[in-house]
Length: 357
Image 1 (cartoon, helix red, strand yellow):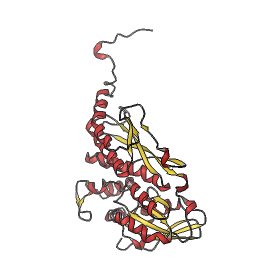
Image 2 (tube, helix red, strand yellow):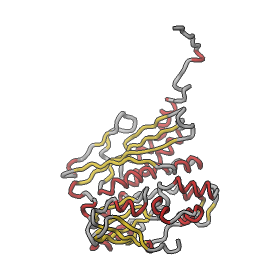
Image 3 (cartoon, helix red, strand yellow):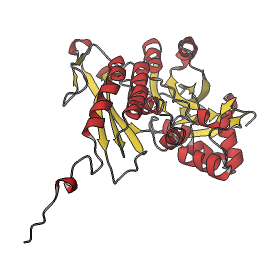
Image 4 (cartoon, one colour):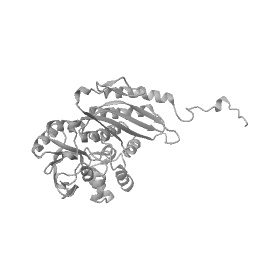
C-alpha cells in the first residue's frame, strides 16, 4: 500500500469539515442567561453537564405518574428563516410539547431541546433558546438542557430544525381522559393566537406561492405584515388548564393541533359518546379566511388542517360551565361554550356555519 504524504496545509481538521467547536462553545455561553430564566427549585446543577438533573419532590404526590411528550415546530421555521427572526419559534416548540402534557392533567416539569443546524451561528442559537426559555417560563417548567448539533454537508449553513421533549407529572387519581367524560358534559373552547404551528405547508403554499404575497407586506385584515401574522407565537395553555382543573370539574382537555378540531377532540372521547360542536359560536381569525379565499381551500380541508381559531378545548361537568368560563376569563383566555357531549356514535362533528367567514 502506497503512503501519501500530507503536508501541514492539507491536513484535515474538524473545522475544515464544517464543524466549529469554538462556535459551539460560544453559543453555549450566549444561551446560558436565557436558559437560566427558565428555572424551577427542583433543578440541580446548570446548563453544560452531560445530563440534566431534576429532583422530584415525592412528598407532593401519593401516586405520581410521569407524562412525556416530544414534538417540533414544522415548516413554520421556514418563515422564521426567511425573515431572519428566530426568537419566537422556540415559544411554539414549548407550546406543542407542554400543551400535549396538560391534556391528561400533567403539570409540565422540564423540557429539553434539540437544535440541528447546518452551521452554528452563536447569536442565532441564542435567539432560538431565548424563545424556548420564554415558552418554559410561560408554561411554568424548567429548561433542563439540550443539544445543538452541527450538520455540515447535510444541512445548508442557514438551515436549522428544532424539537423538544418535555416531562410532566400528575397524581394517578387526578389523571384526566376519556374515562371521565359523561353524557351531558359541555365542551368549552379556548381561542388560539392564530395559526399556531400546524398547517404551515399549506399556508405557505397558498399565501407565498399561489397568492405571491410578500412576507414583509402589510395586510389590512391583519393590521400588520404577513410575516408578523405568520410568526405570531402559539398560545401556551398549560398554566390556564391546570388552574381550570383545580377550580372546576374538568373531564379532559384536547390540544387542537394537526388534524383539526373534530379529530383531536375525538381522541379524548370514549366509545359511545359523541360531541356536537357549533360553528356559529365563533368567527375564525382573518388569516384563516384569507387562506381559504386565496387558495380556494374547501371548508373540510381547512378544518382538518388548521385550528380555525381554537387551540385547546376542555370538556367539563355541566354544573361547572359558568365557573370554568369565569376562571378562563380571569386569566385573559378567550373562552366560550362550543358544544356538548351526548350518547351516540363515537366522535365529534362540526355543525352550522361560521358568522362572516
